[in-house]
Image 1: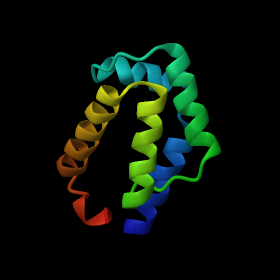
Image 2: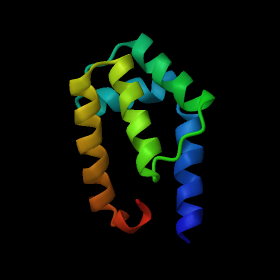
Image 3: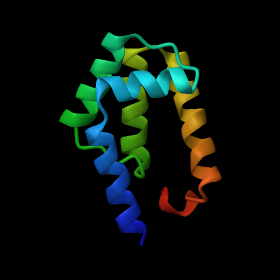
Length: 94
């Protein structure tokens, strides 16, 4: 089951559009521009990323900090960790 959940999450990340990212940013209180949302979407589509892998997760946050700023990346990481706990998915991350 865990591989199935991982595949769904990774697939969803690759399908995120600029509009999705911009909308989610506003919904969760992030200040990002449309251009930053486009850059994030492009990055997710062009790079093989496994957010369940510690190294890939770190790289993804570094790229988010480069595209936006360090504070936005930190805030996104906090939200990510909260969502993992809320959905009881801690065992999927290593």
